Image 1 (tube, one colour):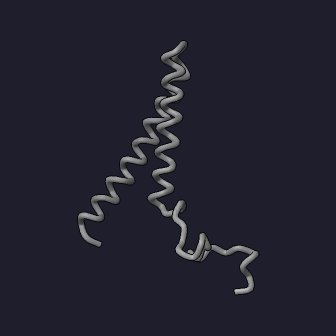
Image 2 (cartoon, one colour):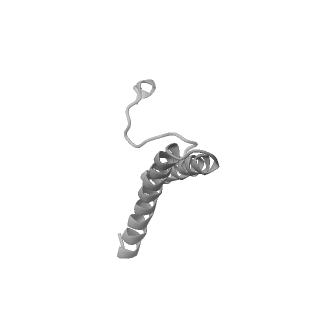
Length: 84
């Protein structure tokens, strides 16, 4: 793997983790603030957290579909596939 690809992967993981942590911090801060500002912080925090978690799952490959129509051959055992 080239250094440029490693840097890109590191940057993507770092951004996803930071976005998730920022979202959690925003939600917790918004819980202690009354009114419209607190609600906005909670809503933005939830949005940032969801985007960060989706980014991390995409980077981990959990959202990827394989070329054979969605069949998962990453070595995970399923009882319905014991005949292999």
